[in-house]
Image (cartoon, rainbow, N blue to C red; front, side, top):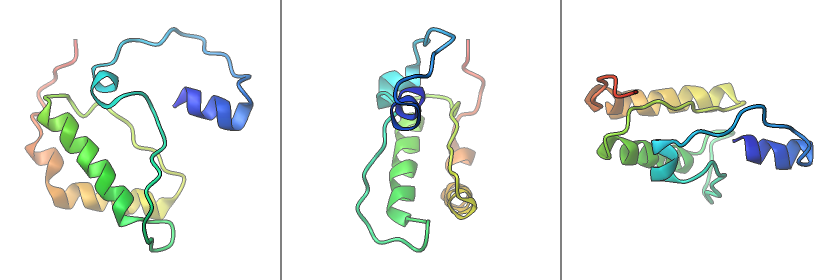
Amino acid sequence: MFSIANVIAYDRLMVRAMQSKTSSICQLLGPSAWFDVKSESDGKWSAAEGALLQNRLLQLQSNGQPPDIYILSPFVTVAYELRKLIYHSHLLSTWNLADKRE
């Protein structure tokens, strides 16, 4: 995410104070990126974007990764719809939430 914000908003002028650590989530899903989901939307909310996120979370879950992630949105409606989607999918309740961090 740092790299994306640095390019888009700061013309590569931000300085990273810490070295990046190896991340098992990054190794599985790849580096931070924007996904161009072409779909109809209801205002700011896009069900197709929500489905893409849900699939990525399922990918983490099926590979035994703990849900140690942040999902950011500048829009209250999107955050609300994502919470609803994740709650109704029962994704978190089926995730083995035993602390796997070292």
